[in-house]
Amino acid sequence: MAASASAVRPARKPFGAWTAWLGLTPFFLFGLAFEFLPLLMVVQSSLTSKGSPTLEFYRQAMDPLFLRSFGNSIKLSATTATLGVVFGTLVAYAIITTRNGFVQNALTALSDVTTNFGGAPLAFAFIVILGSTGVITLILKQVGINLYPNFRIYSISGLTIAYLYFQLPLMILLIIPSLHGLKREWREAALNLGASTFRYWLEIALPILFPALMSGFLLLFANSFGAYATAWTLTGSDVDLITIRIAALIRGEVQLAPELADALSMMSLLIMAACVGGYLWLSNLSRRARQ
Amino acid sequence: MKQPRDLWRSVILGAFLIFMIVPVVATLIFSVSTRWDRSLWPEGYTLKWWIDVTSRPLFMLTLRNSFIASFATMLCLLVLVTPTAYWMKLKVERAKPIVELITSFSFGVPGVVLALALIRFYSNIPLPIVNHPAILVAACMVLSLPFMYRPILNALEAMDFRVLTEAAQSLGANGWSILTEVIIPNIMSGIISGCLLVFSTVFAEYTLTNLLVGTRFKTFPIYLVEWTRQDGRMASALAVISFVVAWITSLLIIWVTSKTGREAPHIAGR
Image 1: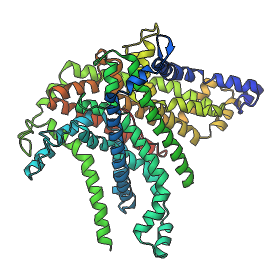
Image 2: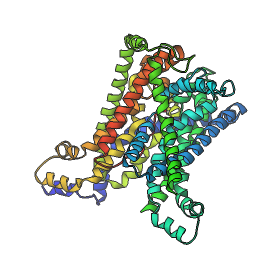
Image 3: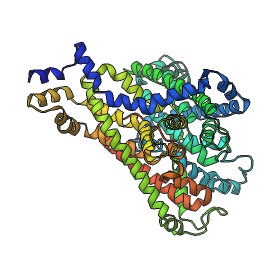
């Protein structure tokens, strides 16, 4: 009895602590087997050639061809993240300031649902409305606006619109808690002291929101940078994104160059991990500021 | 003063609603139209595409495969995560950073990179799981690990698990029956919303499936993408089914979590 009762207290003795860690063994083994060992192998293989260390594959990965793919991915991610942050914050602000409780709940729920959308069905939905014979394309043609051939849904600008479909709701969900943190009294105090609404936003609200906006940008950037299914369904290999290139190398469509795929993977992993790291750091900061 | 301010809000919210609703509704109408590529409105309505695409053997097979993958991932994660989270909270809180590094791995690693790493590692190891559905389930577990872990941890933190554990122990219960008879019933809402999140993630998963098992284990999204290349009208019916599955699981999640508090936004699988 006494022994079992002491087992539930937080273990302080070195022996107790050591056995307590053993309980996590299955979980750590899973992490090793399916996350860290495979990833380590990619790191190692990207840095070795015939048993000796080399940077050769990173030199190959710096080829203008691949740099263009990285550039496209970064441009697409930065664009959709910026638009997502700006319009997401605007919509979120409209949602939380509306006095209609039903509208508020319904739109929050809509964001909750649609941020899970993505991939093939979403891509196809956009072909239906914005493809060359899509319904929006036809309506615009009727009023004299010809989208095609200047715009194509199967291109980077088409992808931007499709990505916004999941970026906007994500930003809305991320920023709503921070917008709730803006106290009504701050605004009233500023206006009483003679500031305009514009100056209140510029000098008080936006600086307070800045860490939250920035962390939202980083998460949206990573969300778009790592995306593959939507782009692949919408454009096949037409659009030159880095995830599309890596996938093509994996399938051996282009050439069998596993080490090159390894090096490209490590570079995109670094970009994405930096964004997620920054997001975690900043969102911790703004969560602590709210408390 | 009030009128123009409310107008501004209605315009923003209206535009947002239209942007979010139109693609889904248009896909639904497209799937029941005879033709809708020359005129503003469909030229006629039919259920032909629905009947045609759902009566093919591949339809049931891919649907079944997606359910198998989703439920296998869900069960494996449940068995792996629940005892781990409980044990960690009870005995080794210090392990939390390492546990969370493992659970949030998929946030920082693109799907294509995860697929590449698994292929490279397991093709060098004499373990016949490359190209086998088992490696897909393992990859889907990595992908959806945070969605199982987070709700379960939140539910654990919301209950007095330490007092309940001590009470159960003083009544002579052993570790296993404490977990299954005391802890799990008390974190059921977390477990259910975790399972739903995992289900919706894996059911819609395309990247890992396509790269890891390809045509050997066709899932529903694979079937959908094949049709988008062949016949849009069939693809639209399949897309509507995906939307409906996603809507139902998301609404269930909202319903379950509305009783227990909000979860972090859920992102994956694109």
